[in-house]
Structures are given as structure tokens and as C-alpha cells.
Length: 601
Image (cartoon, rainbow, N blue to C red; front, side):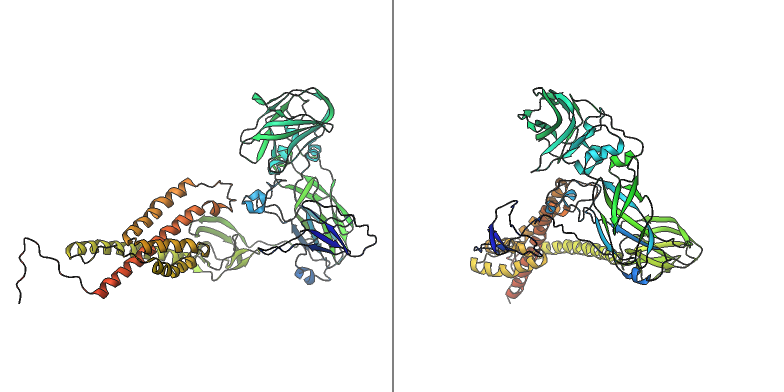
């Protein structure tokens, strides 16, 4: 992009942030047109990553479904509840403030869809409400220290995985609890502390399992020192420096993990960081509902805070809302909203029709047996797994029929009051099991035919050598390789068409026999695939491995090559057999020296 046109004037732009002085006043609307150069090659695209206008703040709010609101119009006594959940990526309680591109394949690089909650809803009548829910800790180390009663100010660049227990003050508390910061290309990790003091020599205790600083720089009241290497034992030799605010920048760190840590910084005054008891948040955390400021009290232990677990929150007092459209705004601060529930009215008590005595045992094929119920009335049994119409359930030997959706996502069946023992199966697996049986029988049959064929081959005269192939001219091989490569491209991957064509062309042109092709395919499938599967071991991050298939892609393509070789070998063998049939039976074998030739007519 070369420039932008705004209000009839062109402004050149460059990479990065551009500050444009427009000099416009009382403008109701503004259009920005991009000026790009069309060059030969792919389609030219251009855009603006971020546009900031003083005094203009864009917001976006989501609206929940309105069916319940319409159904309760005019009913002020009916219970009503809204549950709002912040849109997050996987593993939302281990979120780095710094993260890479979402295409990097790591869970912590996904980011969150929302940093806070912005929701629009419309209560059907004027009501009194309360709020409760769950929140998580924010980014500020010093704000979290204030919650637990730490004296002084300590701050850091970005906590690894956002864990509050790894905040900056942990490097000054005289305990093994460390400070661990995120380490990302393009970012500078640092740890900061306040207090009038003189700093000279420091000792940085390393943290096992993460990077250790090897080159640092001290900034005292904005004045930077020269870079200093971290010596043996974590020693840092600095000239005596007096100041009130100090920042230790980590310029280089040794290790592989995307985290850098300091267990303890010796050479500065220590502090005390409480690790037990309750946090003291008061009613300082607030959200906005309509035109009201609603204060929430966070009630949690310091241990829960340090571990990064969700923290319980509830409104300090009930509040009133009129009927009609209302917006809830919960922005990230010392705490970040995760799930908030607005409740109005009391729901009538629900008499339970019974309970699940035992949840049963689940097998790997999707079957759950031993599920026992104790019911006093007809009920609805919900399997808390994603709905799948292929699931079937039987109670005391009687089929419960086709399942329905339960609790919004699960698989559910109505059950009679007499139901006691339930078995849940995954019906499509029956076809899979049948396929296994058919495959075993077919394999045994093929083995028998192979053995019989070898015995017959030993007893009959040889018409040809199995697996022999005739070389083709380069032109004919190139033409015949096209449909074969198209077939492989359709079955496996279109992007591999050129490789399929080259491989088939070589086999036809050089006359590679079916025996050699089959042996090569067997070696790939029987040796190379198992060996690569053992050697290539993606990191296990607790089940959050969306990039697993990418790391194992080499195994996939080796398996594809092996299967393709078997297909080509089969095609070679069938073609050779057809050619033999067209030529007619093989001539009689020559008489041996020990058997006289037969007499003529």
C-alpha cells in the first residue's frame, strides 16, 4: 500500500504505525480509501490492521437468543436467568499475555476471541437482579500483590501462561516460588521493583525447566547500564547504582522453552508474599449493567489465585433494571470475567425423579455398561457427550429408541420409572466389528490361495517369470501415467499429482516388475511406517495437540507411498496376466535328458 485518501487529500504511508494530521473539525463521518499499486503476479491485497481516531472507540456486543424473553413478556414473577460466557480459546486459564500467530499450532498461540464481556439483552419486565459467576486474574502483577497484602511495587513484562503465582514479587520473597516470564521473539522480558536503594552486584537463581538469563541490563530511574553477562552461579557485576525504580532487562537467555525464570534475586531488599489465607478484594471490582455500576466481591483463597484457578465472584448488593434493551459491559482489569450469571426471581423447586446410582464403565468402542438408575417416576437420561444419532440405549433389555438432544448438546433418552440397568452402545461400531471379521477371513483366504498358488506353480511348467515387466517408450509411459496419477490424486491428495505422475512414469519407463514394487511397498508399510511412528513423538500437552497430525505428516506420506506401490504392482500383474491370456497357452516344456521324447503320430 502506497497511501490513503481521506477527505480529498492523499497521505503517503509506510510500514508500521502512521500518524496523520488531518486538521478536520466537527466531521460526522469519514471515509478512508486505500491507494495500492497493481503489480504483475498474484492478486494484490491491502488493508489496515488497526485504525485509531482520538475520541472514537468502537465496541461490539453479542446478543443472546430472545425466545425466552418473548415468552416471559409481562410475567414479572417468573424466574429468569442469563448466563454469559467470554469467548476463549482452548485452555483459557493458561493464557500468555504474549502469543504468536494462531497458525503456529500451539494452544497458547490461539488467543481469546474476547478480552472481556459485552452483551446486549432485553429483560421482558422491570426486575430486581443479582450477579454471580467466575473470574480470572488480570495481567498486572502489582494489582495482584495488593490483593494479598504485599508491601512495595513489583512488576514484570508478561507472566508465563498468565499464572499469578509466577508474578514478579515471587523473585524477592526468599522462597523457592519463582518469577517466570514469557519469552517470545520480538518482545523484551523484564522484571521491575521500586524502593530507594543502591544496587551493585546481583545473583540470579535459575529455575529448572525454563530459560536462564545469560545477558542482562539494569535500568535505574530511566538510565540504562551497559549490557552485562551473567556469570557462573548467576552473578551479575554492576557498578553501584542509586535509584528509586529499577528494571532488569533480560537481553539473552539460554534454553529452549518459551519461558524465562528467576527463582530469587539476591542483592536487593526482600519482601514477604503471603501464600495462604483469603484474598482481600472488597467490592472494588465492578461491571456496568445499563447505566449502573454493579460492584462484585471476589471470594477466593490465595492458593487458588496463585494456581491460576477461576475465582468465585458475586454482586455485593441486588440492583434493579427496567424492561427493554440493556447492555452489560465487563472489561478486563484486576480481574477478567469468564462466566457471569444474572438471576431474577426464584425458580420453583424441582422434584428429582431419581438419581444415577452408578455411571457404568465405558469401553474403547463407545459402549457403556453397568449403568444403574434408581427412579421413582419417568425421567430423561442424558449422556453428557456430544449428540450422535448413532448411539443406542437399552434398559433392562428393552430398546429405548432413537435418542434426542439433551441439555443443549448431549444425547438423551426417555426412561420409564421401572428402569434399573442401562447399556449404551454406538451402533455404527457394529459394522466396524463386522468389517474386522470380514477382513480377517479375507486375509486367511488370500494366504491359502497364495500357498496353493505356489504349490501349483512348482508343479506346472513355467510360462513366464512372475513380476517381469516390459519397458515402455518414454512417450507411452508419460501418457499412461496421467490417468494413474489422477486416480491417486483423487484418492489421496490432488497436490501430490506431480509426484504420483513422476513415480508411475518411472515404473513404466524402466520396466520395474510387480515383485520389486510389492517388496518396496511392504518395506515402507511394514518397516518404515512403524519406525517413523516411534521416532516422531509430538509433545504431549495434556490432550491439547491440534498440530499432532502435522507433526506426523511424514508417516502419512510414507504410508501413501506404500499403498500406491501395492496398487501399481497389482496393476502390473493384472496387465501381464491379460497379455499372457491373449498370447495363448505357453509352449510345452523341453524334454529332459532322462525322459525320452514322445513318439509322433
